[in-house]
Length: 146
Image 1 (tube, one colour):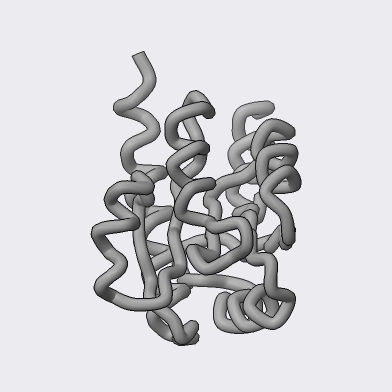
Image 2 (cartoon, helix red, strand yellow):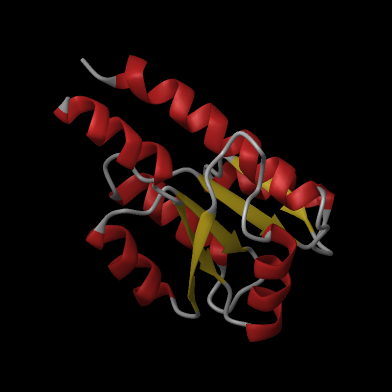
């Protein structure tokens, strides 16, 4: 019975998306493009917006972040931060990197990003890419456990 109650709570839990962009307008555009739910089969999202790299690190260290969106054009840049997260944080959440050009995909590979979406922010493409990333990361979690 307790496990049924726990399962119900987990099903109602929202996905927490950490959004890093130094530009407020960029954060607003991303948040609006994401809406409240990125896909019908996934729970609603809660977006935690931050404007500095130390705030990203603090939020991730506090836990509870399901997925991260980093602005590759932020000052300081999201690409270097992505690489830092992947190298320094054990079991870092998956990262979607926003890049200025599709040709920046090689930089996203260098940064170890799990997904990349090019600007301008597209209200169809961004939620779809984020939903795909969430599904891939949750599908991998059970097999990653020893």
